[in-house]
Length: 381
Picture 1 (cartoon, rainbow, N blue to C red):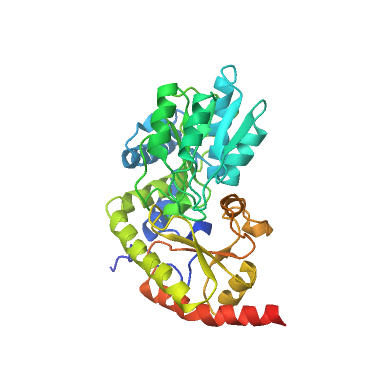
Picture 2: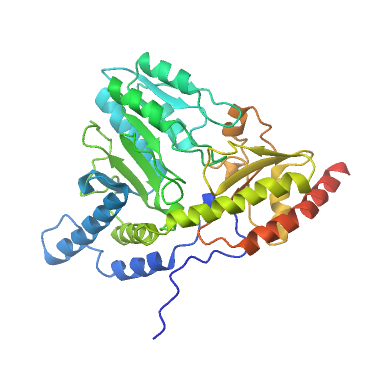
């Protein structure tokens, strides 16, 4: 019998990994295998319940080993935004008597900003970012010293790829006893995760796991009181154990190979960064040119709307994104690019999925000049 190829094979022309990517073959196999044994309540003492509980515990243990944390500190949820809400409101609820302020950068995801804004009794203070999307480190630390219930800072920006100064901010926050919640979306299995965090949130679909699995890690030194009681490693509702097992399997598969894949992605993005501005007039690259994620590039193009270019590229089989990483479906302007001082109505983001081929990048670079000219001609008429 021939075993299926375990390597990722995204659709040809697909360059929108931030929006999701195909389930890794090994993760798909794990999902099917676990589905038949994970339907019972893992809290029950009977045989079927214990069997489901063992699968859930094994998934927590696997995620914990990758992140180098304790298994009992790992929780699953139905999505990363739900995990972020449980993290922010849960930590704030345990510290509201200390301070009412929540600190966050202006470039945080809408999941962070929305949770912080809607947390009862909280006062959100946002810290400016520079033209590359990096938070003002000195200002963030100064605000920490002025006092806060908690602070939120992404490991790197999922829209422009810029890394944030987690190490410097985290050290000061820890010295002051202020919990630091870090959004690890698009970082885990793509880049080195900084270690100076107290609470971590991530999404399994960003490493080829199933959609609908958020990861929440709370260090034992952090007090938190989420609105939804964490039960047997799951926050909010009945656990999808098969999906948790699939997410863990995907991460296990990538444990040894992701650094090499990251370097390959960095080489491909470096090529796009180099060739695109030379081939097309009016291209402006966004994000830090060096201190960035290896698989993400955002650019603007003068004289066109980003959505129009996305549609034109899609017509020739190339899938990219436009607008904010978390609001593009609503055609809302990018709050990240706005905070960076960049025109936010013409942005295009390229993000490489696992297994992205050189051929797909070749096709993108070949298609771009004609697509841009076609859209510009449309706007001229």
